[in-house]
Image (cartoon, rainbow, N blue to C red; front, side):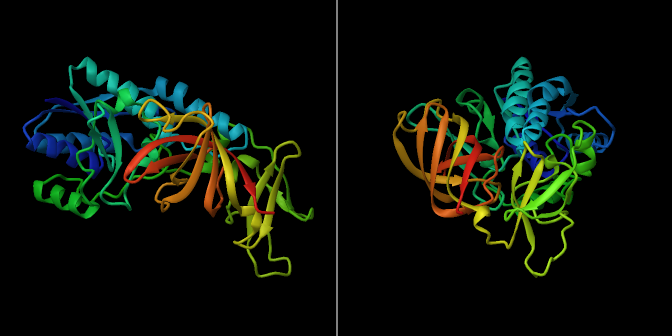
Amino acid sequence: MRIVVGMSGGVDSSVAAYLLKRQGHEVIGVFMNNWEEDGVCTSEQDFADVRAVCDVIGIPYYSVSFAKEYRERVFSHFLEEYRRGRTPNPDVMCNREIKFASLLELALSLESEKLATGHFAGVEKRADGKYHLLRAKDENKDQTYFLCTVTQAQLAYALFPVWDLSKAEIRALAKEAGIPVYGKKDSTGVCFIGERNFKEFLSNYLPAQPGDIYSVEGEKVGRHDGLMYYTLGQRRGLGIGGRGSCERWFVVGKDLKSNRLLVSQGAQSDMLFTLSGKAENASWIAGEAPVRDGESLKCLARFRHRQPLQEVEITLRGTDVFMTYAQKQRAVTPGQAVAFYSGDECLGGATVTESEDLR
């Protein structure tokens, strides 16, 4: 087959391309440079790494920019969520709107039959004729959480060649093949924007509105730099002294109307935990919900990457999902994604909107 591989300059996508080439496919590497704002991003070095890898593997490569699409479909939503006092996860939207939309469209224009990436996830076409998204063999590296809103049409073209390998096996393969990035550290930070001083970065796009920090008992205990800089469960950067107790302070809420940051002492504060919640804009990989509107389903969920799977019961109302948890959950944060699972399969995902604390 002719296969386009989305290449980041990292070891996972490099080995994905290497394995497909070794299997006899016609492989084309494509590097995306989707951020053109300030030169902080490491895109030049990353593309140099892609060139070096492709030369070793013996495949053609291209660099493309979807900066306009990224700004319109991902970054604008990212900023709007922060304006609303929520904490978004742009990687989830980036996969659906850029990697498996804009990049997939390019791959198809090159008459490619599949689009491959270095994601730790599996895809399988089963007897029902549908494509199923499966958790990676290495549970610690599983990335289905970030893929939970891809569509059936997108998944039909997806290949994840490294899904059944551990990170150690990937690095060993790369070293054996002479792939120069075999020891390159994993990337972190915002999708395509990279690692940076996040507070400083965000302040370039949203005006900060400093305000007061209040305890849940109603006592003013400090000042904050702007609600957008804080997230539920955060304990660093609050600048609050011990105030007669050795217990640490944690963010437990935001009052947007009064511009107040709410905090409580103790990692086990009831305001950090919930037994139920709601999510919106549910997207189901099969193309349809696993149960009918108004019906309930017991399944598994993950509220953040690498979190162990949690037992939940969900009830659907249109594209809203009402969730009840078998065990109390900590810091389920509005704006973040929740991914739903049945066994080794990711069913889909939604965006958390509400959580009821245990007070």
